[in-house]
Image (cartoon, rainbow, N blue to C red; front, side, top):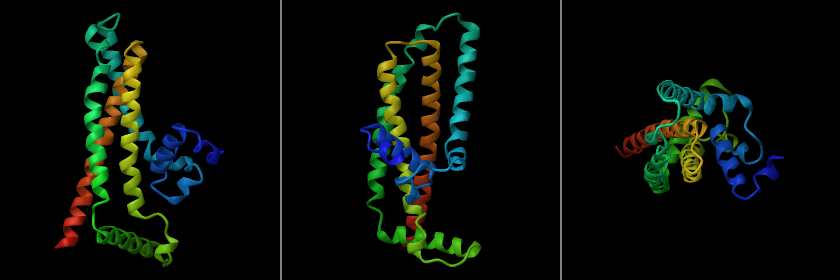
Length: 199
């Protein structure tokens, strides 16, 4: 089922990236869906918080207006004006990751192996597919695919603006900002580690 799904054009790429993010970059994400616990831990909390925030904004608006004001109907313009800049920023950072020295990724793998050996039986690097570099790859790609899908949504939904689409627009906007904060945090930690290795 999963093998067939990821072969579907466009949809397969989205499923592969989202599943890889949920699976924390593990190699198993290429052949099977991540277990439900991974989805609950990695994706559901941020989606739920963003959805609750969007619901609060929408309820506040509907309590004062019987219909969407003009400023609200233009809200999807933010998706088309802000998100392309965020997407360009994310792609630029994603490309810079490949310029990091090999010693950076080796040191990350060493940290993961040390941590694993402290709580489990010793294992070789080849036996541990869940390496931080793969997780960095997934954490970089997932925000980009969400932003790209949000731009697509904003481009088409502006012609059919309703209270429901307004709610989804706020949900996507808040969720993407949460992902961008996560991406910035990842950049900071990676840069900190890279600088520390050079000292």
